[in-house]
Image 1: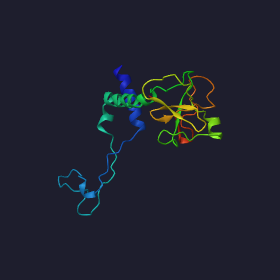
Image 2: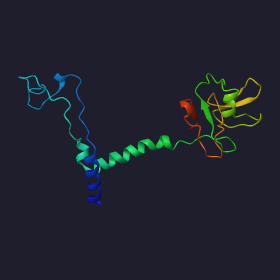
Image 3: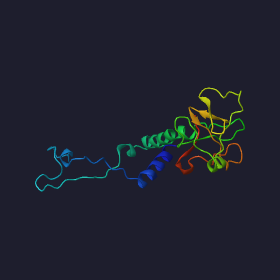
Image 4: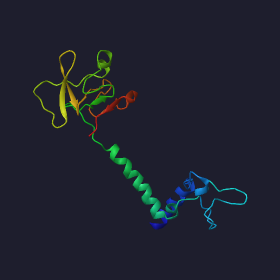
Length: 172
């Protein structure tokens, strides 16, 4: 087991090079000669941008833990629950809506139908309604009007997420 980890770590080390941070001022660099200065003080040549593997890359277990940690850090975003309508279809918010007022009408509303309230129903904490121009009531989630997406064909589809970088699946 341990030799397998070492082989993986060696393979990863051979494919990456991690540079030490470069000090913003050449006078802040220490070249290790005890003078506290950068490089050869007589010729004025410094050693800026030296590349050395990080100490963690020299320890296979530390390298493995760093890789596992990087995967664990990214997982909460991916595992956030997408909010759906009562029929299981993904719900979206529109960046151009401000102060809880819907702005998606006409052609926009054909592609992004508003998620309408039937009236007496309740969806829980964070949910409310807003009156649209036609008098219908549209659901809001944390004061943001909620929409469906016409290209989502079945429950679980989230094809509208990040469309135009202004449409976002609602996540909680």
